[in-house]
Image 1 (tube, rainbow, N blue to C red):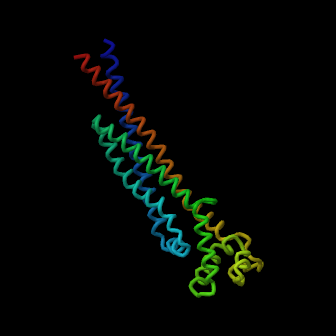
Image 2 (image 1 turned 180 degrees about the vertical axis):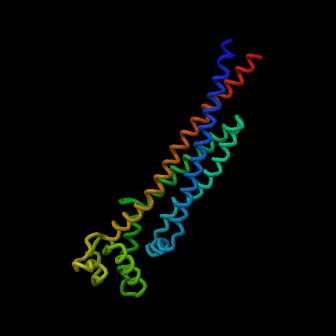
Length: 241
């Protein structure tokens, strides 16, 4: 009698877990699509591509490439998870758990690399500093001068770490290094300003990737719970027969 009364309750619990997994997989697909779109925009935006090329900071794209690949994989995994949950296919559910763990690792790695090459006091700053110093050293050439002008006017910065970079390299301070209103030289160097600019853009992408990582953990736990409930139901049916 205990088995008979517990089976309908167990079936209800299984249906509830299945519905939750289905809904969370739908949310995961939306998040994955959003991450794909944002990553692609950061990679292909024409104006931003010019900045990366001018400053030779292609390392910024490493984390974005990882997250583009991860986002495509996440959207595929979401469909697999929905199908496995609805069919109550135990092997498929175990595969789904493994895929969630893989997506978690990839998403975490992608977010870490993005932040490591886009935030203040990160690995991107020495790269920007080196590129700015090279441009200042060659500012007598028209191409280097135009790139410096474009960067310093648009960002509102001067030199790599400040106006003293020009003095140290025995170069004249260009007009674009000065505020058009006050006439004073910009206090902040381009290394700091560009780092803040990159951080503002990559922060959203890294936040989305980390949110997906949390969702992967929740889905993996729920899937394991569903597997346990299905096995328990099968055992109870076998015992009853």
